Image 1 (tube, rainbow, N blue to C red):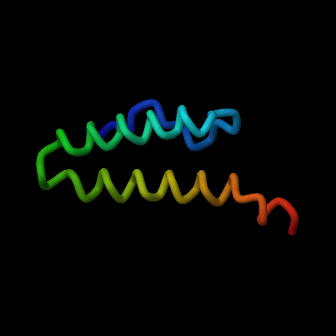
Image 2: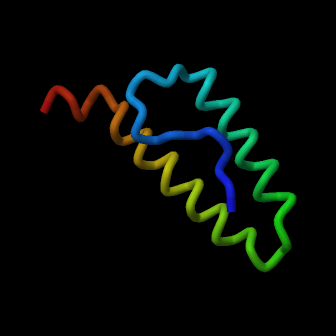
Length: 62
């Protein structure tokens, strides 16, 4: 399974880059066999959740 160029550990990725990487990852997941898609979507969701938590301004003030 590929998630494109999305790197959740890269703090300098611009939101536009993340959007393009997420779109690429979705295309890759959707091209996978049906039985592999759930795992791909789960992995992508986890990466996006980590990125959201890391970039959340409310977390940096506490």
